[in-house]
Image 1: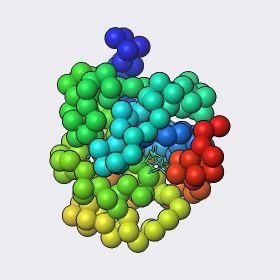
Image 2: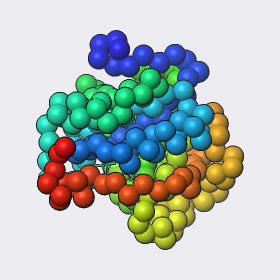
Image 3: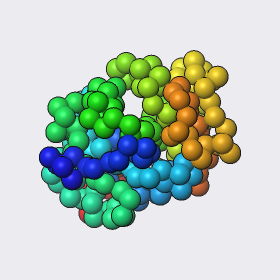
Image 4: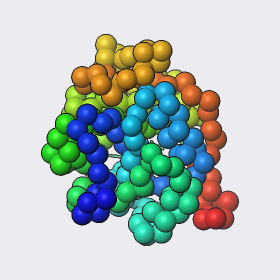
Length: 199
Ligand SMILES: Nc1ncnc2c1ncn2[C@@H]1O[C@H](COP(=O)(O)OP(=O)(O)OP(=O)(O)O)[C@@H](O)[C@H]1O
Ligand SMILES: O=C(O)c1ccc[n+]([C@@H]2O[C@H](COP(=O)([O-])O)[C@@H](O)[C@H]2O)c1
């Protein structure tokens, strides 16, 4: 890491998994491994958020969430980061713009679970995200129709890449997005917090 930021070389393809990770769990680790494999990513960076702009309750302290995330995901090609706190961003569009300025020539892919696709159109400047970086959506138990019929999926239907062609998604020009029908994992931070919280 340089100045607390991970190192990446021009030409590398980095998947970004943003989240509250309050706490991190096996579902996060699962979709990270699937994304590495199915998209042919060089690295995945977890962006442990200072706080989701759409959530009213504050998460556990950032240092605690980072330490716990490192215990859950110990993988040579995955970096657990507090990049958003360092960059002073919490809106994803701002984070991606700042990363693209800091890492010229590096290709970024935004990763998210299917639950987030359903409300993606509520994110600040969400179209800028779609128009700037490829996006991979990973299957998650829940309402499949909500994701497939979401505003974002509908508006960007022409930019959808089939799952069979998703390998190398990160080398495509935006807008380009894929829905990856990975085996589903039921873990959720809400359930962990409800069942007594942190391990
Ligand atoms: N089991 C899972 N399967 C697929 N995607 C997941 C899973 N768990 C989390 N994700 C995705 O990982 C990213 C970060 O998730 P987050 O930290 O919000 O965990 P969460 O379990 O969704 O938390 P919460 O229940 O507090 O909303 C989001 O894009 C989310 O959709
Ligand atoms: O930019 C936004 O408006 C925005 C709104 C909601 C969520 N996000 C991002 O989505 C990611 C998942 O958030 P969460 O809290 O569901 O883990 C995390 O990186 C958030 O910063 C971003």
